Image 1: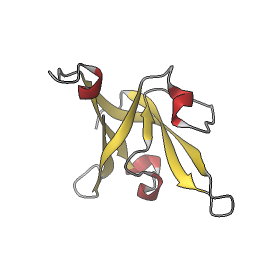
Image 2: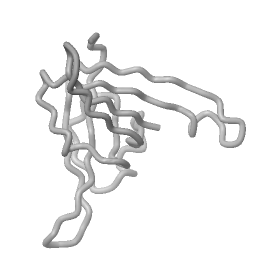
Image 3: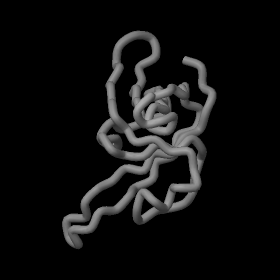
Length: 114
């Protein structure tokens, strides 16, 4: 698997004590990333943009740290956030698909975002 990007995943969790959502940041360097820009006649370009990310198990990812609706940022960020709008100045995608590909020579987690 070719590594061509660094990404940051912001994983949303509910704090059981305060009942407030919080965001946990995970940084992954040297992942495979492919972005596509597609036209959607009804909604314009932004709603049709997609990203495909493959994180090798050599980087020790935990599939429990990914969920639908989490945020992918194509960069290695070191900022903590309290809401998704804190990332408005960055290129970001919401996770829409998570696959655990544990077979073959290069086991990895495959994440899709829009």
